[in-house]
Length: 401
Ligand SMILES: Nc1ncnc2c1ncn2[C@@H]1O[C@H](COP(=O)(O)OP(=O)(O)OP(=O)(O)O)[C@@H](O)[C@H]1O
Ligand SMILES: CC(=O)N[C@H]1[C@@H]2OC[C@@H](O2)[C@@H](O)[C@@H]1O[C@H](C)C(=O)O
Image (cartoon, rainbow, N blue to C red):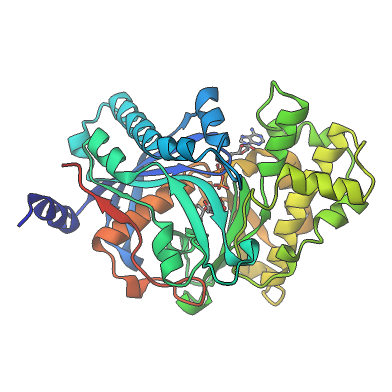
């Protein structure tokens, strides 16, 4: 037998597996690295997050990724070069973290590598009836494995699409396995570049679990903050938005896109919610001369409204006492956004995933580590399953040798 298969077999049989989850999201702020220790799998999964850090991307890395990110027309050679380059970059970042944590690569069983999403094209968005849902993450797993010397599981989203999903949100699986609680209906709300949530019924009924994107999180806030204030990469604490006023007509126009009325689950990305999307809405509402502060206030409200309307739609019949919202992602640091959500959703308990023992910045990296643990030892049949959210094992295995 190929010794790699022996190695894989041995990892799958260990009582505790050390898995490093990697997530680089749509915000392009850096690579989230979470070292997790897993016991069990499926609904008996226990995870301990031993280390977590975000390795920031340099301006050079951000610029290289932006050359292809969410763009319909790109330099194809550049995309080809970026695929291994990001794999090697992520592997080097993992090795640097391990040095910092005084650990050897041999102490890590597996890397769970999300890669970098460069384009997300669900059919409802691309509109070509003869083409399927599609999504593309780069940062090749073989390069991560060979450079780091650590078995790597990567490219999780393709199987989701192959089995009938849109390739996202994958949070449903890890949220259900790690964060469900009998007797409490929960919404796990993540506010990264895009906002999404997972609904976890207190009945633990897997047929009712679902995850969906709901609209923008920070993607437009980041883009317009950079545009108006080039020295800033995001609206820290929402301080810029707090100085402006929401323009109601522009807000209504932004919310008029059919994405918001579409049924759950659904996915989207910066391909739709771009600066051009906002510019078109400004043209229609004759608000092209809005001040940067008013625009950021309106865009922050736009993110909040997408989230609020989706949660209200998901939970109109649920008694307030039984539903708790746990937020994660960089949007939790935006005071304007968080205050709006708390004010407009008063009937629900509102906390962050820190209340559940997972740092809000680490959650997505831990979720991908959980998917890798499932790929190694789980049983797909134990996962939530319904249209758009198939119960399948995800990820491609790259051996280091
Ligand atoms: N102090 C802060 N104040 C306001 N916003 C912040 C702060 N810190 C981070 N953010 C926002 O959070 C973003 C990063 O969030 P996060 O890392 O959750 O996104 P992501 O994982 O890249 O996105 P996605 O989940 O859509 O893939 C930053 O780009 C910024 O907009
Ligand atoms: C294609 C893609 O990378 N989608 C991301 C993005 O960022 C947030 C939202 O849009 C979500 O659908 C997804 O990531 C999370 C981790 C998910 O799959 O659950």
